[in-house]
Length: 440
Ligand code: SAH
Ligand code: SF4
Ligand code: F3S
Image (cartoon, rainbow, N blue to C red):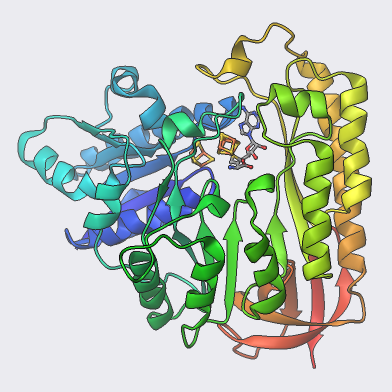
């Protein structure tokens, strides 16, 4: 069998895509390797979201070229490929920038990869595809399989929101919802091959409106949860990412009614200032955001809330920044991701004149992260002495790790084989990043 090595950068959608690329390449006789030097095909699944992410791709490609040259001395041929959002954003430019690149596919075209690889092997003509719609891709991918006890499943792709800083609408195309039939069939394949938890993915997952099982009417997300929850052997359902004002009342009610739906929601506010939110082209203000949280907490009082933040957006004043800091105190986030604003070519915000100096962005980020970490620590410490059901998914030496319903990473020292099981754990230690405990 030939071997493929995939380096995955970026978001959970890219992790999902890399798994589907493995599914597609398996049909061509490729199996995965974690060892680059053994790979006949080295592929980077790229991310374009911030400048840093995009730059990293080119240093990684350089490393692959060195291995390719070394393998050539040993008489072995190696193909180098790029997939993902950088390909979609750069198009042909990726090929002209990197002469040793053999194949490149955008995020909506990776189902074509086996065909392109075959063509390249035959002709040695470089291959590139970057179409803009997802329907053909999902229709033509082969069956999937679980590669762990917790799996991602893309139900929606693309975004029509056009937040003024963001490249995603240009890399993932316009919003596309997969049908319920397709999603349920994939969920069953994952459960049959061992998964216990499914994380439903979408750039804007709450606007999922796929064709229902009758083939006539569209469903909403809450209806989909109900149907997925019926799958025997599936223990937990999660979903991400939610656009704050697109959450419907029935999704909020599902947090109260559907036991398998975990009490956790990723609800990115980005900024705590109405003026900045407006400049970002987000369709909500701070009080609307807080109202959504209030409704969620009413339906499911213990729900854990996480968020993304951007600091140093063009024009962000000290006062705007302090408003973001205040939101953290108000909401008490369980987890968070925070970034310095990165100007991306082709986005409206990159053309705004009032860009913030790098040093100011760095200072604001460090202040915000300190506050977020302390909020996270406080959240985790509130579980000391309590019992949490943990789904174990990883093991290393004498330790097994998994996740609580609130997506906290929980470690337990034991030689018991707990992978794939849910066990009640008494929490004995808590830090900002994880919990540890004992089996009771
Ligand atoms: N669809 C999701 C976000 C996907 S991108 C949403 O709307 O919330 C993931 C995160 O990256 C965003 O939430 C944002 O915080 C961050 N991000 C996106 N573009 C960025 C940029 N140009 N600079 C810095 N952070 C950015
Ligand atoms: Fe980007 Fe905004 Fe769409 Fe999220 S909602 S993917 S931030 S454009
Ligand atoms: Fe990056 Fe594309 Fe995801 S830009 S964050 S890999 S959608």
